[in-house]
Length: 281
Image 1: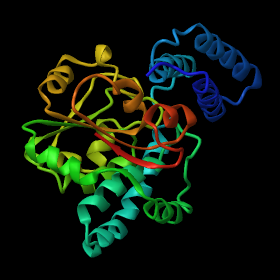
Image 2: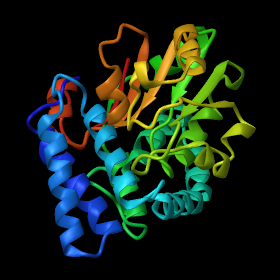
Image 3: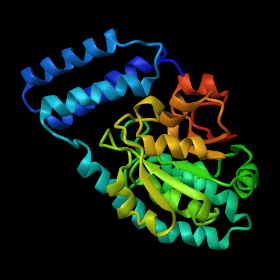
């Protein structure tokens, strides 16, 4: 997916929020913001938004000498999600359709996203989760389970820290022996890395690898040989979140995109309204 005009304010907001988080001096803030605005303006907009964001966040990490600016935020998100697990397991136990509910929960976990303007606080999460789960699911959850049953190799692409606790509930219902779970190869915004996967105990369920890239999406040319081998072998890709959609839509692989639609650019591209829960094969 190419970078749209509508993507630019979101990229600028991400830059502004990161600067406010990391830098106190106003002159330093201004210098870095001007540098980032120049990077956004000079980027090739024929590339995906995550490609622009990758370069932007590399500049932020280099300028602030902070290798993982969102580290404490990610730990908070993991803690919040972990506290929600007993409630969610109780919901699954009572559900007449636990498979679809697990899909809904995995998508709803995308609310824990500090990179999107729909970031939810700890206090608001239960209420927002209930509201989101009451909405219709755009797509066929049963189709995901059918395709997973047929597939010989499944590659599950994670999105955010915190959210991967919600992913765990779905992983427990899928054929674990077929699944490789991939996280980012380095810190970028609040995206899940190997540290977060270990915190959520994902390796206890499925094989986990790093994709070798610090892009907030899956830019195949930037990933490791190990990841590209897994991607090539996979009969089914399960891709979480907008960043993975922006970088993988239209690639020709059988892919199930799972996300909450958070912006007009994605809504127009995917054909679903902002705020909707989507499982798209």
